[in-house]
Structures are given as structure tokens and as C-alpha cells.
Length: 257
Image 1: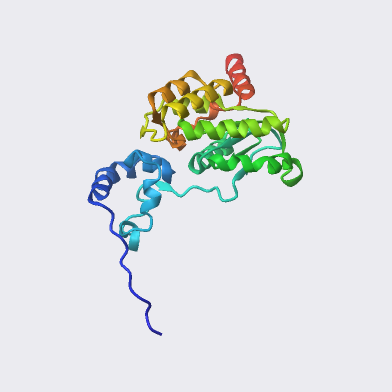
Image 2: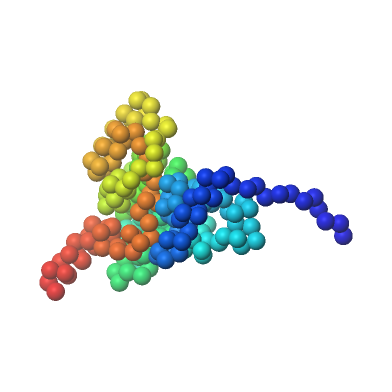
């Protein structure tokens, strides 16, 4: 049998290699996180590490995700079931979805019945599935909450999802602690879609959605902050981002103790 044509795997740019060399040693000792979260730590770009997976940098196991103390996120099934009844959280990005369900699975009292990977604009295609959660997965959703990136596209996705569920008479709101935490994080750079018209529309949408002022402030700055800024280590403490009712119950329990 003849060998097929030989193709060279592309070598990453020198600046990428330099970034790895500067980051690998300290990263080995850090807590394990999702791939896109680690990508933000190294490159200030949540998508760069996944893009490098097929390059010579990762060929022949010269470098592995294990060496970077991270792993590729789960999410092809798009849902993690946690309890039979309660609010359902829809997360825009796969890595945040992966880190969030792991944290709640380990929590003593997960406030959410399920977490769903929404995929940004793709979340608007979920309506029929959300209606049938009691039949398909035995979950009784009491409400739906949404959390996404702090940028124009993230606000537009949240507004579209909210409009769709509202028109279907399904209870929907924003996961305020998660939005606020993302907005308070370091921006990755300029939001290149932030022209005056879209920025104004996004700011008005954020106001109508009742999002925290920290979010609208970031929109006015014209920057973008991906959800992955709130990584697995931050989400491991679920007390601050559980549903409001669960946070209240936890606070009462702490006071009584």
C-alpha cells in the first residue's frame, strides 16, 4: 500500500510560541480549567488555544492540554441535569457551561435544575425543547435564566432569547450575578462591532433586560468581555451565582448557624 501525500502541519507564529514558553511553567501548578479559559489566561483570546490544536505545536504530544492544566469542554449534548425541579440556566459559551455544571454537581444544594449550553444566537432554536423538558428529561422548569458575553453580540443574543420565551409565555430573566462578574472582569479588547447605532441599541436592550449597570458601562466603553473570564476556579464557589432564592436560603442558613 502506498503512502498518501505527505502534508506538513502548519507551524504557529513565533509570538504564539513565545507566549507558550512564558506561560507553561507557571500554568502547570495552577488549578485545572477549561481550554478556552486557559486560552484567555495565556493569549487574552478564548479561541486561540483551540485553533492551535491542529498545528505542529500539539503534534507528537510535544505539548498537551494536560501540560497546560486544562481540558476540552464537554457540551455536545448541550445539557446537564442536576435536580428534578427548579430554574434552568442557559449559558452562551461551551467552556462556561462545562465549568458551571461541574461546580453545581459538586455543590451540596444546586439551585438550578439544569444547565444548558445555548450557543449564543443558537439559543433561539431551543424553544420547542425547553417546552418539552418535563417529557424528554423529567425536569420541571420553574423559570429560565440566561447568561452571556458582555459585548454587543452577547446582548443581542440575550434579547432575542428573552423575546422568544416571553412570546411563548415562559418565565425568563437574566442571571444577574454572572453578568455582573463578567462585566467586572478585564476586557479582551475592543468590540469591533461597536458602531454608534448598534451600541445604542445594545445599551437600550440591556436596560430593558434589567442587566446590571456594570454591563451597560462596558458597552459604552466599546469593549468585549467573554464569559470565559469567569473560569472554573471562580465558579467552584457556587454561593455567589446560584439563583436568587437559593442564595437567600444559603444566607439564612449561615446566619442561623
